[in-house]
Amino acid sequence: MPLPTLRSSVLCALAAALVTAVAPAGAESAFPGQPIRLVVPFPPAGGTDVLTRLVMNDVTQATQWNFVIDNRPGAGGNIGLDMVAKAKADGYTLGTGQTANLAINPSLYSKLPFDPLKDFAPVALLATQPVVIVVRADSPLKTVADLKARAAGQPLNMASPGTGTVGHIAGEMFARRAGIQMTHVPYKGAGPAITDLIGGVTDLYIATPPSVIPMIKGGKLRALAVTSAQRIAALPDVPTVAESGYAGFVAEDWKALVAPAGTPDVVVQQINTAVNTALKKPALIARMQEEGTTVRGGTPAELGALIKSETPRWGAAVKASGAKAD
Image (cartoon, rainbow, N blue to C red; front, side, top):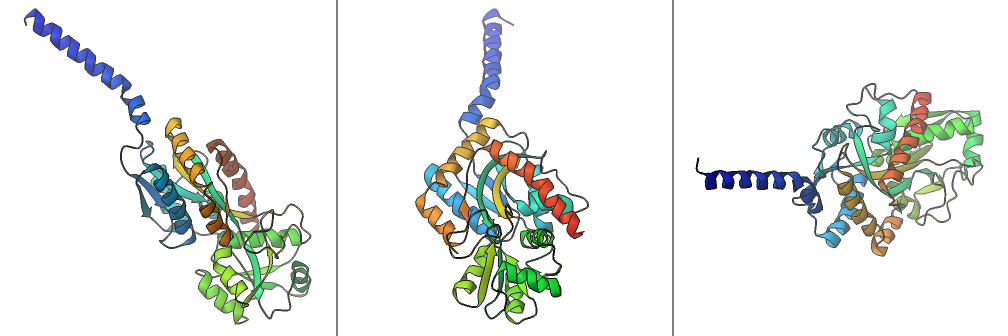
């Protein structure tokens, strides 16, 4: 091969090697270069789906990033999150995790296809939501103290949106703390549960605020307490369980963005920054408050610490209740 041609080949090879060497950093700095798939492990129009779309709509408006919401319901959120856990760790697949599928399901299911603490990179805490203890409007139960006194005479029928939901397990937590007996009656969603509560089939219902706030304000249901640390703006006159004689009692449904473990830190931080910026918008905060939801935010490390602390706490409640979903 003539010398000039050889020199040219060597230079080309060196140039190619240099391009390959810097490609990862360049790719990260240009993130995102394509649409981001966001897996919501529940059906469209549900609470998790609506909240996710609200937040990511504001992120899109601020950044012009393109998010494709992919609803993958089933097995209490396990199917969708398993897809996230097994996706390529490049930042182009995210998932909405929450109390149920990250902290409750590990104890509710005998086998889980992923490890909540090892298979995900925490990205950002979106919001938290308490559950509300409600009774029908004409119920003789007007306070948490009334509820405990009534349960001392006979077990109460406690409705929930389903076995293993935050409403169910929070109810079990309260029963153990209060030293009372309640018979769990699971339903497939809020609609049938509220119908039977109003009809007198059950004594109380424990559910997230959006499903009961309209009925409370419409005079069909009475709220006894919320399980957040402070009262919520949507129900300012309703005390917390802690205020009602159970200091320190908190049980909240939190929603958060997670990515596959191994997603580059620089990408995780970029998404976290964009989400935190969106969560500071007054219009979004007001919209969330109307539904009994508190906007959160924070660092990936803070979310990781939350998941780590919540998993054994909810797991203990699941085991004490004897609930199983297999």
